[in-house]
Image (cartoon, rainbow, N blue to C red):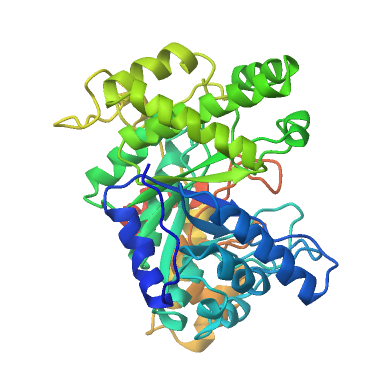
Length: 462
């Protein structure tokens, strides 16, 4: 991994370097930074932020930082207040997450107002819809936030997240359809949610190849602190699945001592990082809670793994030997989109073959959903009279002004989605399609079934 040379640089140069740095063939390490909790005076916040920036700037292998956005934590400082003093010391490319949780579209637009992101020191932004812990009244879909980025902050680089840990045919179809929708809204890079399933990592790369969409992809990895390890698996972010055997092996390693546990965790992540590099990812984002010693150990292990695994096949053999069994996903019957994942000499096959057992199973749309969709589609046509439009909407329990937002759902009212999303499922849906807000499957399963019944599946990607 190439070391980053620190030095004063203009905002425009940093903006260009953020994407260029992901495209120039050098595997990059970014670090996820969480603004500190309050209460704290602005002066003290600036001092703490500068201290954090100085700490990370002393590690040349770090290419950039991604600042977390947690608007539901009222006692935590915002990325806007944190970014400028942090960046003064860090002096490297910076991006920020932009959560739609607890925010309506006008509030997101205000955060994207001209000059706001640049003032915070950011060259890139990555919108997310937000989690459900706790559930808020308002959510702005990440697809809508990306649309706002194009109009409100055209000079800012935009990225998008994708959760690859989907293990049923409908959920894979929905996840990749929403990814395509985000890319069509201007996302220039992808940030893959943490996953210990390297076959899913290769599945994502093959899916992008199949669509001839070779955007740079950064994979998130998680360093688990002592507190997090004691609370496993409840402490994991929504939608992130930690294999039970690996969880047990990690806890057993730390039971032998902190140094042994640190070495074990660093080696597992380093071998995973090496895999991402051999699979064609442009870098990783290190998340979780870690110390300078943890990161130094990880760097040493990563250098060692790269020397021992100089190509895809040597890495694959090492991964299967050391972690092949313990990294089995914690779901009943995991499904994959393609055949031949993680096979010898199979990094870039000449032809991709879909797995017949994971053929697109869209489910069946109910007659009620078909009827409601037909009525609301009729109500949305320009030739329908206002009186008839109001009548049709009343029959379906929908306000007429909501019709434009339902077009991407096949005109299926989204009241069953607790977050009220319209662009597709959130990344927090579990591996088998369960909603993270309530009991039962994700509402967008119904959207998929309806689109299939109407022959409108391509519309889910627009």
